[in-house]
Length: 171
Image 1 (tube, helix red, strand yellow):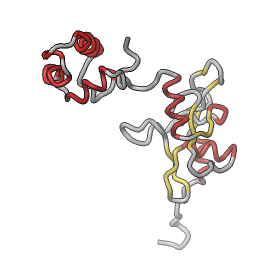
Image 2 (cartoon, one colour):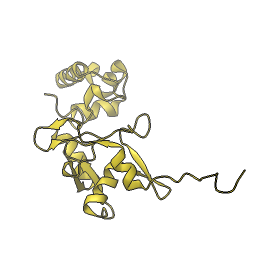
Image 3 (cartoon, one colour):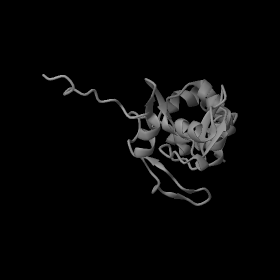
């Protein structure tokens, strides 16, 4: 093999790969405008965010976009989405906040899993209403332990329901 015929392919810099792998033709948010979508897709099954390799380290693309446009994310804070589209990298759709801010934003927008929509839920909304109705009637058959056995949950789970510490949104 003659010298000079073998070329080592170098990976394009992260900033070039970032711009190459987004489209500015994403869905339109009614308040914030058009999303810029990372076209490489989510990083893994079950995780909706995209990622990009930066200096041999994997970084979520929305964080990369924030830092590209606004500078470093302060310690202890995260990059959150106004548009709720995990693959969106439009800096106008991103904001900085705490994990608590993210949770509050999720609840405010009605995106949290609650009640029977939670994967681990053992009860339906109708069962919770029935538990509350019967507990209010009182009696031996309607105490927390008995209701727990009947509905296949612990007495503690029944206490959470009847004290309205769980399933709070149900009337």
